[in-house]
Image (cartoon, rainbow, N blue to C red; front, side, top):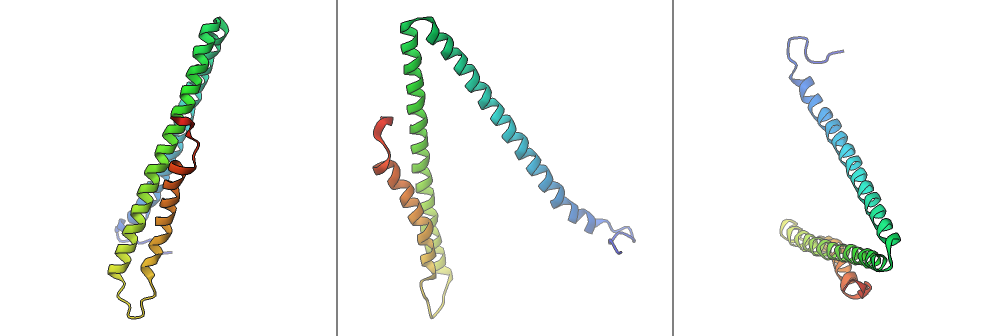
Length: 142
């Protein structure tokens, strides 16, 4: 079996190991980052719940403010989600237009069968992502 470094040439082995080690490092980092983010969210939810429970148990006025706080958090989360959908729709639609322009400029086929129309797929997905927040989503976030 010839590994390529019998004559002191270790370059092919290193060239093969760099992507492998890089891939292992990347996915290890992503796993740890996801785990730490999940733990942070869990701690935030726990401490928020405990604080709201203590406020709600103390008196009537505090209970109202705790409920109002929860409702405001719910509205803010829904608003962020809809804004994210709007941004995602704009980006996806722009990618669709870009693909259409690119394919129309690159493909010079005399029997052109509209290859550039492939860009309609992300364009229409972006349009759907834009239509939902503006017309179909509930208006309770306002």
